[in-house]
Image (cartoon, rainbow, N blue to C red; front, side):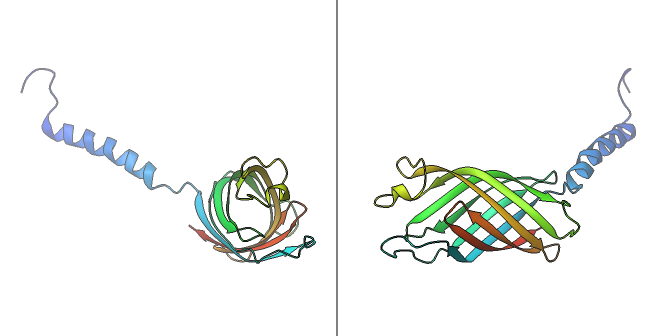
Length: 166
């Protein structure tokens, strides 16, 4: 054995201990999870002049972080039957009331899909793109299942079901 070299048995122990540490860290749960959402029904506060509102359906995926922050995207048919999308960031707030299953959630992002002849139905629309903001109240029935009522500006209220993929 040359001076300064590490005996093979000691080298294997060193490799095993350093290799096990990152693997253990990677296996540690972060508390972050994915949330799959869907909405079968939306109430509109008022119909437009031509009574053109169509049913709104939505499906989405959201990344919920353990610190309450979130980001995600949804695909939906808007009130006029146009395919639309919304990408956003936001926050889920828990433990703000005496009911531990009640939560509040807000999001802000970019909305796409209100195109001619409905581009004036959302504010600040430019070629189908506009800012979007939602606020909602929800109830976490189980660790994996929740429902939420989401205010859609002054337009209406969306009812949403969610499955947390933990």
